Amino acid sequence: MIVPIKQIINKARQGRYAVGAFNTSNLEITLAIIRAAVKQKSPVIIQTSESAIDYSNLAIIFSIMTTVANTIGRAVPIAIHLDHGKNTKIVRECINIGYNSVHMDASDKDYATNIHLSKTMAKLAHQKKIWIQAELGSILGKEGMVKLETGEINMKDLLTDPYQAEDFVEKTQVDTLAVAVGTIHGHFRGIEKVDQVRLKKISQLVNIPIVLHGGSGLSPQTFKQAIKNGVSVINIDTNLRLAFKKALQNTVAKEGDIVDPRKTLNPATEAMQKEVEKMMRIFGSYNKA
Ligand code: G3H
Ligand code: 13P
Ligand code: ZN
Image (cartoon, rainbow, N blue to C red; front, side, top):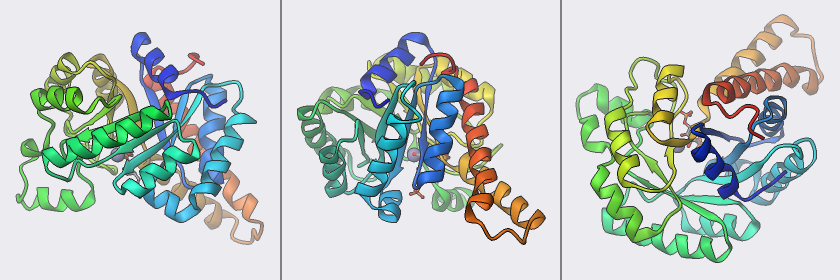
């Protein structure tokens, strides 16, 4: 059942576990995420990026998420979130259509502009009684990785400064903060190193829930330590994409004569569900619905 995100995140913070925020862009991923939440009796955040909205259309994907959440997902708390909203037009549209939370990601702008945009959107979100996430520091993606490998970028320069985070939250009045502490968007096992000391310092100085992006590829121990150091929400996307692709390839390779898309997609949907369930157990959100 859709509930205010505040209810889900505050309970996780008090209970010292993290809630997973999983990316969707279609019916199958939405079913996988919500079926996993029901099976694990776990609260869950289901989120769309701007490109997912572009792929599926905002009204359609919002309708899919709310319908699945309020039917098969009615026994568990579910919130709908916009992930990495860089375009203020899309952020406003998500606020207006009924998302429970939006991410105003102006982390690639200068500090003053990031404050201005995050504060402006926070006011708008709060008028609708929903939550806003902002971001400080640079969480790298694939292009950033190339620059890292060629030595053009020093990872440390990109990480969130704890004292700046304290100032940022005070000035913007945002509800949750996405931080750059060494994770990278995508699956980079062995390369990502979470700066746990920095994370702990940020949590001590910033009295709002902390969101860890780029969760795919991190070890269970890293997640558990990050939760101890104050993380309440963990974003996962690539793990589901990998599970989907592997299962789909297996099905097509083994049963190439199948012509029913449902039979091709079912094993892939189940594989994503298993991945979400695995994350919920690591994050400690199971049996918390
Ligand atoms: O952090 C980014 C998310 O994984 C969304 O990626 O823009 O390809 O949908 P996307
Ligand atoms: P991963 O794809 O690395 O799991 O990151 C997801 C994310 O941070 C979405 O905002
Ligand atoms: Zn992210």
